Length: 489
Image 1 (tube, rainbow, N blue to C red):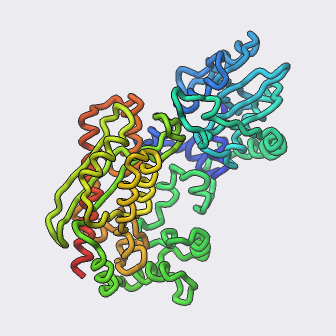
Image 2 (cartoon, rainbow, N blue to C red):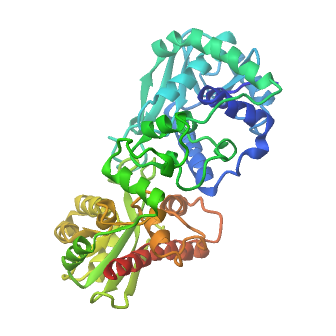
Protein backbone atom coordinates (compact mmCIF):
# COMPACT_ATOMS: atom_id res chain seq x y z
CA UNK A 1 0.00 0.00 0.00
CA UNK A 2 1.42 3.38 -0.95
CA UNK A 3 0.96 6.68 0.86
CA UNK A 4 1.90 8.88 -2.08
CA UNK A 5 1.81 8.68 -5.86
CA UNK A 6 3.04 11.13 -8.46
CA UNK A 7 -0.36 12.84 -8.63
CA UNK A 8 -0.80 13.09 -4.85
CA UNK A 9 2.79 14.28 -4.43
CA UNK A 10 2.17 17.08 -6.91
CA UNK A 11 -1.16 17.85 -5.25
CA UNK A 12 0.55 18.11 -1.87
CA UNK A 13 3.36 20.22 -3.26
CA UNK A 14 0.75 22.70 -4.48
CA UNK A 15 -1.15 22.60 -1.17
CA UNK A 16 -0.78 20.21 1.81
CA UNK A 17 -4.40 20.82 2.75
CA UNK A 18 -5.57 19.65 -0.68
CA UNK A 19 -3.58 16.43 -0.22
CA UNK A 20 -5.10 15.80 3.21
CA UNK A 21 -8.62 16.45 1.94
CA UNK A 22 -8.03 14.15 -1.03
CA UNK A 23 -7.02 11.34 1.29
CA UNK A 24 -9.47 11.93 4.16
CA UNK A 25 -12.44 13.91 2.77
CA UNK A 26 -12.78 12.84 -0.88
CA UNK A 27 -16.53 13.45 -0.75
CA UNK A 28 -15.81 17.20 -0.79
CA UNK A 29 -14.53 16.99 -4.36
CA UNK A 30 -17.12 17.75 -7.05
CA UNK A 31 -17.70 15.05 -9.68
CA UNK A 32 -15.37 15.22 -12.66
CA UNK A 33 -17.15 17.17 -15.39
CA UNK A 34 -17.66 15.71 -18.84
CA UNK A 35 -15.35 18.36 -20.26
CA UNK A 36 -12.57 17.59 -17.79
CA UNK A 37 -12.95 13.87 -18.45
CA UNK A 38 -12.68 14.48 -22.18
CA UNK A 39 -9.41 16.36 -21.59
CA UNK A 40 -8.11 13.43 -19.50
CA UNK A 41 -9.12 11.00 -22.25
CA UNK A 42 -7.33 13.10 -24.87
CA UNK A 43 -4.15 13.03 -22.78
CA UNK A 44 -4.41 9.26 -22.46
CA UNK A 45 -4.78 8.92 -26.23
CA UNK A 46 -1.66 11.04 -26.77
CA UNK A 47 0.24 8.82 -24.35
CA UNK A 48 -0.77 5.68 -26.22
CA UNK A 49 0.28 7.19 -29.54
CA UNK A 50 3.63 8.21 -28.06
CA UNK A 51 4.38 4.55 -27.37
CA UNK A 52 4.77 4.09 -31.13
CA UNK A 53 7.87 6.30 -30.93
CA UNK A 54 9.44 3.38 -29.04
CA UNK A 55 7.74 0.27 -30.47
CA UNK A 56 7.90 -3.31 -29.26
CA UNK A 57 7.42 -2.62 -25.58
CA UNK A 58 5.81 -4.60 -22.78
CA UNK A 59 2.63 -2.94 -21.50
CA UNK A 60 2.32 -3.00 -17.71
CA UNK A 61 -0.82 -0.84 -17.49
CA UNK A 62 -2.97 -2.02 -14.55
CA UNK A 63 -6.47 -3.27 -15.32
CA UNK A 64 -7.82 -1.03 -12.56
CA UNK A 65 -6.18 2.34 -11.91
CA UNK A 66 -6.48 1.88 -8.15
CA UNK A 67 -4.83 -1.58 -8.10
CA UNK A 68 -1.14 -1.27 -8.97
CA UNK A 69 0.05 -4.57 -7.49
CA UNK A 70 -0.22 -6.40 -10.85
CA UNK A 71 1.57 -3.52 -12.61
CA UNK A 72 4.42 -3.62 -10.09
CA UNK A 73 4.80 -7.37 -10.60
CA UNK A 74 4.58 -7.09 -14.39
CA UNK A 75 7.26 -4.39 -14.39
CA UNK A 76 9.68 -6.53 -12.40
CA UNK A 77 9.01 -9.46 -14.72
CA UNK A 78 9.67 -7.31 -17.80
CA UNK A 79 12.92 -6.01 -16.31
CA UNK A 80 14.06 -9.54 -15.50
CA UNK A 81 13.14 -10.79 -18.98
CA UNK A 82 15.27 -8.14 -20.65
CA UNK A 83 12.44 -6.21 -22.30
CA UNK A 84 13.82 -3.44 -24.53
CA UNK A 85 10.93 -1.07 -23.77
CA UNK A 86 8.33 -1.00 -21.00
CA UNK A 87 5.12 1.02 -21.10
CA UNK A 88 3.54 2.25 -17.85
CA UNK A 89 6.36 0.76 -15.79
CA UNK A 90 5.36 0.89 -12.11
CA UNK A 91 7.73 1.22 -9.16
CA UNK A 92 7.23 1.62 -5.44
CA UNK A 93 9.74 2.65 -2.81
CA UNK A 94 9.18 3.45 0.83
CA UNK A 95 5.46 4.04 0.40
CA UNK A 96 5.73 6.13 -2.78
CA UNK A 97 4.36 4.87 -6.11
CA UNK A 98 5.48 6.07 -9.54
CA UNK A 99 4.25 4.93 -12.94
CA UNK A 100 6.33 5.98 -15.94
CA UNK A 101 4.95 6.34 -19.45
CA UNK A 102 7.90 4.79 -21.29
CA UNK A 103 11.09 3.10 -20.04
CA UNK A 104 13.70 2.40 -22.74
CA UNK A 105 16.73 0.15 -22.29
CA UNK A 106 20.02 2.00 -22.82
CA UNK A 107 23.04 -0.30 -22.54
CA UNK A 108 23.31 -1.39 -18.91
CA UNK A 109 20.80 1.24 -17.82
CA UNK A 110 17.56 2.84 -18.89
CA UNK A 111 16.12 6.07 -20.26
CA UNK A 112 12.91 7.32 -18.66
CA UNK A 113 10.37 9.16 -20.83
CA UNK A 114 7.35 10.98 -19.44
CA UNK A 115 4.78 12.01 -22.08
CA UNK A 116 2.78 15.24 -21.92
CA UNK A 117 0.17 16.53 -24.35
CA UNK A 118 1.55 20.05 -23.84
CA UNK A 119 3.61 21.89 -26.44
CA UNK A 120 6.41 22.82 -24.04
CA UNK A 121 8.09 21.47 -20.92
CA UNK A 122 6.60 23.26 -17.92
CA UNK A 123 8.13 23.60 -14.48
CA UNK A 124 5.64 21.19 -12.92
CA UNK A 125 6.54 18.53 -15.49
CA UNK A 126 10.16 18.64 -14.34
CA UNK A 127 9.03 18.47 -10.72
CA UNK A 128 6.96 15.33 -11.20
CA UNK A 129 9.77 13.83 -13.30
CA UNK A 130 12.06 14.42 -10.33
CA UNK A 131 9.77 12.34 -8.13
CA UNK A 132 9.72 9.56 -10.72
CA UNK A 133 13.50 9.64 -10.92
CA UNK A 134 13.72 9.26 -7.14
CA UNK A 135 11.34 6.30 -6.92
CA UNK A 136 12.75 4.47 -9.95
CA UNK A 137 16.41 4.82 -8.96
CA UNK A 138 15.65 4.01 -5.32
CA UNK A 139 14.02 0.82 -6.60
CA UNK A 140 17.39 -0.26 -8.00
CA UNK A 141 16.96 0.74 -11.65
CA UNK A 142 19.83 2.71 -13.17
CA UNK A 143 18.54 5.71 -15.11
CA UNK A 144 21.03 7.12 -17.59
CA UNK A 145 18.69 9.92 -18.61
CA UNK A 146 15.27 11.43 -17.95
CA UNK A 147 13.25 12.98 -20.76
CA UNK A 148 9.93 14.77 -21.06
CA UNK A 149 8.24 14.23 -24.42
CA UNK A 150 5.88 16.95 -25.68
CA UNK A 151 3.99 17.83 -28.87
CA UNK A 152 5.99 19.58 -31.60
CA UNK A 153 3.76 22.28 -33.12
CA UNK A 154 6.06 22.66 -36.13
CA UNK A 155 4.96 19.22 -37.36
CA UNK A 156 2.77 19.39 -40.48
CA UNK A 157 0.79 16.25 -41.18
CA UNK A 158 1.09 14.78 -44.65
CA UNK A 159 -0.31 11.26 -44.89
CA UNK A 160 -0.19 8.97 -41.86
CA UNK A 161 0.80 10.53 -38.54
CA UNK A 162 4.60 10.52 -38.20
CA UNK A 163 5.20 9.95 -34.49
CA UNK A 164 8.90 10.64 -34.91
CA UNK A 165 8.08 14.21 -35.92
CA UNK A 166 4.88 14.73 -33.92
CA UNK A 167 6.75 14.41 -30.62
CA UNK A 168 9.95 15.99 -29.42
CA UNK A 169 12.13 14.95 -26.49
CA UNK A 170 13.65 17.35 -23.99
CA UNK A 171 16.23 15.99 -21.59
CA UNK A 172 15.78 17.06 -17.97
CA UNK A 173 18.33 14.72 -16.36
CA UNK A 174 20.49 17.36 -14.72
CA UNK A 175 17.50 19.27 -13.40
CA UNK A 176 15.88 16.24 -11.77
CA UNK A 177 19.16 15.06 -10.26
CA UNK A 178 19.71 18.48 -8.73
CA UNK A 179 16.22 18.35 -7.24
CA UNK A 180 16.67 15.02 -5.42
CA UNK A 181 17.42 16.39 -1.91
CA UNK A 182 14.34 18.62 -2.12
CA UNK A 183 12.22 15.72 -3.38
CA UNK A 184 13.23 13.49 -0.47
CA UNK A 185 12.50 16.24 2.04
CA UNK A 186 9.12 16.92 0.43
CA UNK A 187 8.20 13.24 0.56
CA UNK A 188 8.80 13.17 4.31
CA UNK A 189 6.68 16.30 4.79
CA UNK A 190 3.80 15.00 2.72
CA UNK A 191 3.79 11.59 4.37
CA UNK A 192 3.31 13.39 7.67
CA UNK A 193 0.41 15.34 6.16
CA UNK A 194 -1.30 12.16 4.95
CA UNK A 195 -0.89 10.47 8.33
CA UNK A 196 -2.12 13.46 10.34
CA UNK A 197 -5.54 13.16 11.98
CA UNK A 198 -6.45 16.83 11.67
CA UNK A 199 -6.95 18.90 8.53
CA UNK A 200 -3.93 21.20 8.02
CA UNK A 201 -4.49 24.89 8.56
CA UNK A 202 -3.70 26.47 5.19
CA UNK A 203 -5.27 29.71 4.06
CA UNK A 204 -6.47 30.30 0.54
CA UNK A 205 -4.10 32.04 -1.84
CA UNK A 206 -2.70 32.16 -5.35
CA UNK A 207 -1.64 28.53 -4.91
CA UNK A 208 -5.31 27.50 -5.18
CA UNK A 209 -5.04 27.92 -8.96
CA UNK A 210 -1.32 27.41 -9.58
CA UNK A 211 -0.32 25.37 -11.45
CA UNK A 212 -3.79 23.80 -11.50
CA UNK A 213 -7.21 24.86 -10.24
CA UNK A 214 -7.83 22.90 -7.03
CA UNK A 215 -10.94 20.76 -6.90
CA UNK A 216 -11.44 21.57 -3.20
CA UNK A 217 -12.04 25.28 -3.74
CA UNK A 218 -15.73 24.78 -3.01
CA UNK A 219 -14.72 23.75 0.52
CA UNK A 220 -11.89 26.15 1.21
CA UNK A 221 -13.50 29.17 -0.46
CA UNK A 222 -16.91 28.75 1.16
CA UNK A 223 -16.51 32.08 2.99
CA UNK A 224 -15.87 33.99 -0.25
CA UNK A 225 -19.06 35.46 -1.77
CA UNK A 226 -19.87 34.41 -5.32
CA UNK A 227 -19.95 38.03 -6.45
CA UNK A 228 -18.32 41.24 -5.29
CA UNK A 229 -15.21 39.81 -3.62
CA UNK A 230 -11.76 41.36 -4.03
CA UNK A 231 -10.67 38.06 -5.58
CA UNK A 232 -12.73 39.02 -8.64
CA UNK A 233 -10.98 42.35 -9.14
CA UNK A 234 -10.00 42.47 -12.81
CA UNK A 235 -6.40 42.56 -14.06
CA UNK A 236 -5.11 42.42 -10.51
CA UNK A 237 -3.83 38.96 -9.57
CA UNK A 238 -1.30 40.22 -7.02
CA UNK A 239 -3.53 43.08 -5.90
CA UNK A 240 -6.35 40.67 -5.11
CA UNK A 241 -4.27 38.72 -2.62
CA UNK A 242 -2.66 41.84 -1.20
CA UNK A 243 -6.12 43.21 -0.34
CA UNK A 244 -7.27 39.85 1.03
CA UNK A 245 -4.17 39.63 3.25
CA UNK A 246 -5.17 43.01 4.69
CA UNK A 247 -8.52 41.57 5.71
CA UNK A 248 -10.50 43.12 2.86
CA UNK A 249 -12.88 40.56 1.37
CA UNK A 250 -15.49 42.69 -0.42
CA UNK A 251 -14.76 45.19 -3.17
CA UNK A 252 -17.11 47.71 -1.59
CA UNK A 253 -14.80 47.77 1.43
CA UNK A 254 -11.68 48.74 -0.54
CA UNK A 255 -10.54 52.14 0.79
CA UNK A 256 -11.44 55.07 -1.45
CA UNK A 257 -7.79 56.16 -1.59
CA UNK A 258 -6.60 52.74 -2.84
CA UNK A 259 -4.72 53.17 -6.16
CA UNK A 260 -6.65 51.36 -8.89
CA UNK A 261 -6.78 51.28 -12.67
CA UNK A 262 -9.77 52.91 -14.35
CA UNK A 263 -11.39 49.56 -15.12
CA UNK A 264 -10.91 48.45 -11.52
CA UNK A 265 -12.36 51.69 -10.14
CA UNK A 266 -15.39 51.19 -12.38
CA UNK A 267 -15.83 47.69 -11.00
CA UNK A 268 -15.35 48.71 -7.35
CA UNK A 269 -17.66 51.72 -7.62
CA UNK A 270 -20.26 49.50 -9.19
CA UNK A 271 -20.38 47.41 -6.02
CA UNK A 272 -19.84 50.28 -3.59
CA UNK A 273 -22.51 52.60 -4.98
CA UNK A 274 -24.55 50.25 -7.19
CA UNK A 275 -23.32 52.47 -9.99
CA UNK A 276 -23.91 51.77 -13.67
CA UNK A 277 -22.24 53.52 -16.59
CA UNK A 278 -23.99 54.21 -19.87
CA UNK A 279 -22.10 56.57 -22.18
CA UNK A 280 -24.94 57.00 -24.64
CA UNK A 281 -23.18 59.35 -27.03
CA UNK A 282 -20.22 57.02 -27.56
CA UNK A 283 -22.47 53.97 -27.86
CA UNK A 284 -24.72 55.67 -30.42
CA UNK A 285 -21.70 56.80 -32.43
CA UNK A 286 -20.40 53.23 -32.50
CA UNK A 287 -23.81 51.87 -33.49
CA UNK A 288 -23.99 54.44 -36.27
CA UNK A 289 -20.89 52.97 -37.89
CA UNK A 290 -22.43 49.49 -38.28
CA UNK A 291 -23.33 48.66 -41.88
CA UNK A 292 -26.42 46.59 -42.67
CA UNK A 293 -27.36 43.90 -43.39
CA UNK A 294 -25.64 42.98 -40.13
CA UNK A 295 -24.36 39.41 -39.75
CA UNK A 296 -24.08 38.29 -36.13
CA UNK A 297 -21.37 35.69 -36.53
CA UNK A 298 -19.77 32.98 -34.40
CA UNK A 299 -17.33 30.14 -35.16
CA UNK A 300 -16.79 26.96 -33.18
CA UNK A 301 -13.43 25.27 -33.63
CA UNK A 302 -11.64 22.09 -32.75
CA UNK A 303 -7.95 22.01 -31.72
CA UNK A 304 -6.76 18.38 -31.79
CA UNK A 305 -3.37 17.68 -30.25
CA UNK A 306 -2.76 15.10 -32.97
CA UNK A 307 -3.53 16.58 -36.42
CA UNK A 308 -6.50 14.82 -37.97
CA UNK A 309 -6.09 16.05 -41.55
CA UNK A 310 -3.31 16.58 -44.07
CA UNK A 311 -1.87 20.07 -44.06
CA UNK A 312 -2.71 20.75 -40.42
CA UNK A 313 -0.54 21.11 -37.33
CA UNK A 314 -0.98 20.10 -33.67
CA UNK A 315 -3.48 22.28 -31.83
CA UNK A 316 -4.36 24.22 -34.97
CA UNK A 317 -7.75 25.96 -34.78
CA UNK A 318 -10.03 24.21 -37.28
CA UNK A 319 -13.49 25.78 -37.70
CA UNK A 320 -16.19 23.12 -37.93
CA UNK A 321 -19.35 25.13 -37.24
CA UNK A 322 -20.79 28.60 -37.50
CA UNK A 323 -24.01 30.41 -36.69
CA UNK A 324 -25.35 33.56 -38.35
CA UNK A 325 -28.23 35.78 -37.32
CA UNK A 326 -28.76 38.38 -40.05
CA UNK A 327 -30.60 41.67 -39.53
CA UNK A 328 -31.42 43.75 -42.60
CA UNK A 329 -32.00 46.95 -40.60
CA UNK A 330 -31.49 48.05 -36.96
CA UNK A 331 -33.96 46.24 -34.71
CA UNK A 332 -35.24 43.99 -37.50
CA UNK A 333 -36.25 40.40 -36.79
CA UNK A 334 -33.18 38.30 -37.63
CA UNK A 335 -33.02 35.34 -39.97
CA UNK A 336 -30.84 32.41 -38.93
CA UNK A 337 -28.33 30.44 -40.96
CA UNK A 338 -25.94 27.77 -39.74
CA UNK A 339 -23.41 25.11 -40.65
CA UNK A 340 -22.13 22.05 -38.79
CA UNK A 341 -19.63 19.66 -40.33
CA UNK A 342 -20.76 16.05 -40.77
CA UNK A 343 -17.63 14.69 -39.01
CA UNK A 344 -16.84 12.35 -41.92
CA UNK A 345 -13.67 14.29 -42.72
CA UNK A 346 -12.16 17.75 -42.87
CA UNK A 347 -15.16 20.13 -42.59
CA UNK A 348 -13.43 23.30 -43.74
CA UNK A 349 -14.06 23.25 -47.50
CA UNK A 350 -17.79 22.63 -47.09
CA UNK A 351 -17.95 25.22 -44.31
CA UNK A 352 -16.31 27.89 -46.43
CA UNK A 353 -18.47 27.18 -49.46
CA UNK A 354 -21.66 27.58 -47.44
CA UNK A 355 -20.31 30.58 -45.52
CA UNK A 356 -19.61 32.45 -48.74
CA UNK A 357 -23.18 31.74 -49.85
CA UNK A 358 -24.73 32.75 -46.52
CA UNK A 359 -22.90 36.08 -46.25
CA UNK A 360 -23.58 38.47 -49.08
CA UNK A 361 -21.29 41.21 -50.39
CA UNK A 362 -22.84 43.98 -48.28
CA UNK A 363 -22.90 44.73 -44.57
CA UNK A 364 -20.70 44.10 -41.56
CA UNK A 365 -19.96 40.90 -39.69
CA UNK A 366 -20.47 41.38 -35.97
CA UNK A 367 -18.65 38.98 -33.65
CA UNK A 368 -18.00 38.98 -29.92
CA UNK A 369 -14.24 39.13 -29.34
CA UNK A 370 -13.88 39.47 -33.10
CA UNK A 371 -10.13 38.80 -33.07
CA UNK A 372 -10.96 35.09 -32.79
CA UNK A 373 -13.23 35.03 -35.84
CA UNK A 374 -10.73 37.19 -37.74
CA UNK A 375 -7.92 34.73 -36.97
CA UNK A 376 -10.11 31.82 -38.07
CA UNK A 377 -10.97 33.50 -41.37
CA UNK A 378 -7.33 34.29 -42.05
CA UNK A 379 -6.35 30.73 -41.17
CA UNK A 380 -8.94 29.39 -43.60
CA UNK A 381 -7.62 31.76 -46.27
CA UNK A 382 -4.10 30.43 -45.71
CA UNK A 383 -5.13 26.77 -45.89
CA UNK A 384 -7.72 27.13 -48.67
CA UNK A 385 -6.00 29.59 -51.03
CA UNK A 386 -8.68 29.16 -53.70
CA UNK A 387 -11.04 31.02 -51.33
CA UNK A 388 -8.47 33.43 -49.88
CA UNK A 389 -9.66 36.69 -51.51
CA UNK A 390 -13.27 36.19 -50.39
CA UNK A 391 -12.31 35.09 -46.87
CA UNK A 392 -9.89 37.95 -46.33
CA UNK A 393 -12.57 40.35 -47.53
CA UNK A 394 -14.90 38.97 -44.85
CA UNK A 395 -12.21 39.45 -42.22
CA UNK A 396 -12.00 43.12 -43.17
CA UNK A 397 -15.74 43.52 -42.57
CA UNK A 398 -15.63 42.30 -38.96
CA UNK A 399 -16.75 44.54 -36.10
CA UNK A 400 -16.54 43.63 -32.41
CA UNK A 401 -19.66 43.72 -30.22
CA UNK A 402 -17.44 43.54 -27.15
CA UNK A 403 -16.08 47.04 -27.85
CA UNK A 404 -18.68 49.10 -25.90
CA UNK A 405 -18.25 46.85 -22.87
CA UNK A 406 -14.49 46.45 -23.07
CA UNK A 407 -14.04 50.22 -23.30
CA UNK A 408 -16.37 50.77 -20.34
CA UNK A 409 -19.04 52.69 -22.26
CA UNK A 410 -21.69 50.33 -20.89
CA UNK A 411 -21.22 48.83 -17.47
CA UNK A 412 -23.54 47.46 -14.80
CA UNK A 413 -22.40 45.92 -11.49
CA UNK A 414 -23.78 42.50 -12.44
CA UNK A 415 -21.06 42.27 -15.11
CA UNK A 416 -18.58 42.06 -12.20
CA UNK A 417 -15.82 43.79 -14.12
CA UNK A 418 -15.98 41.40 -17.06
CA UNK A 419 -16.80 42.12 -20.68
CA UNK A 420 -17.16 38.57 -22.06
CA UNK A 421 -20.50 37.50 -23.52
CA UNK A 422 -20.93 35.04 -20.64
CA UNK A 423 -20.78 38.00 -18.22
CA UNK A 424 -22.67 40.55 -20.30
CA UNK A 425 -25.62 38.39 -21.38
CA UNK A 426 -26.98 37.50 -17.90
CA UNK A 427 -26.45 41.09 -16.78
CA UNK A 428 -28.32 42.65 -19.71
CA UNK A 429 -30.68 39.88 -20.84
CA UNK A 430 -31.24 37.60 -17.82
CA UNK A 431 -34.18 35.85 -19.49
CA UNK A 432 -31.84 34.33 -22.08
CA UNK A 433 -29.70 31.58 -20.58
CA UNK A 434 -27.38 28.76 -21.60
CA UNK A 435 -28.42 26.80 -18.50
CA UNK A 436 -31.02 24.68 -20.28
CA UNK A 437 -28.63 23.63 -23.05
CA UNK A 438 -26.79 20.31 -23.00
CA UNK A 439 -23.71 21.99 -24.49
CA UNK A 440 -23.14 25.20 -22.55
CA UNK A 441 -19.68 26.41 -23.54
CA UNK A 442 -17.26 26.34 -26.43
CA UNK A 443 -14.75 23.95 -24.89
CA UNK A 444 -17.40 21.25 -24.56
CA UNK A 445 -18.53 21.82 -28.16
CA UNK A 446 -14.93 21.47 -29.35
CA UNK A 447 -14.25 18.32 -27.34
CA UNK A 448 -17.45 16.63 -28.46
CA UNK A 449 -16.87 17.35 -32.14
CA UNK A 450 -13.30 16.09 -31.84
CA UNK A 451 -14.72 12.84 -30.47
CA UNK A 452 -17.03 12.64 -33.49
CA UNK A 453 -14.12 13.18 -35.88
CA UNK A 454 -12.07 10.43 -34.23
CA UNK A 455 -15.04 8.05 -34.08
CA UNK A 456 -14.87 7.99 -30.28
CA UNK A 457 -18.29 9.40 -29.41
CA UNK A 458 -20.50 6.65 -27.99
CA UNK A 459 -23.72 8.59 -27.38
CA UNK A 460 -26.59 9.54 -29.66
CA UNK A 461 -24.82 11.32 -32.52
CA UNK A 462 -27.96 12.95 -33.93
CA UNK A 463 -28.81 14.33 -30.50
CA UNK A 464 -25.27 15.65 -30.14
CA UNK A 465 -25.59 17.43 -33.49
CA UNK A 466 -28.82 19.05 -32.30
CA UNK A 467 -27.09 20.09 -29.07
CA UNK A 468 -24.14 21.61 -30.95
CA UNK A 469 -26.43 23.53 -33.27
CA UNK A 470 -28.48 24.83 -30.34
CA UNK A 471 -25.37 26.06 -28.52
CA UNK A 472 -23.87 27.92 -31.47
CA UNK A 473 -27.28 29.40 -32.35
CA UNK A 474 -27.56 30.70 -28.79
CA UNK A 475 -24.21 32.48 -29.15
CA UNK A 476 -25.40 34.62 -32.07
CA UNK A 477 -28.92 35.06 -30.70
CA UNK A 478 -27.31 36.40 -27.53
CA UNK A 479 -25.48 38.95 -29.67
CA UNK A 480 -28.75 40.07 -31.26
CA UNK A 481 -30.30 40.59 -27.82
CA UNK A 482 -27.26 42.43 -26.43
CA UNK A 483 -27.16 44.70 -29.46
CA UNK A 484 -30.84 45.42 -28.89
CA UNK A 485 -30.07 46.66 -25.38
CA UNK A 486 -27.37 48.97 -26.74
CA UNK A 487 -29.78 50.31 -29.35
CA UNK A 488 -32.14 51.27 -26.55
CA UNK A 489 -29.75 53.70 -24.80
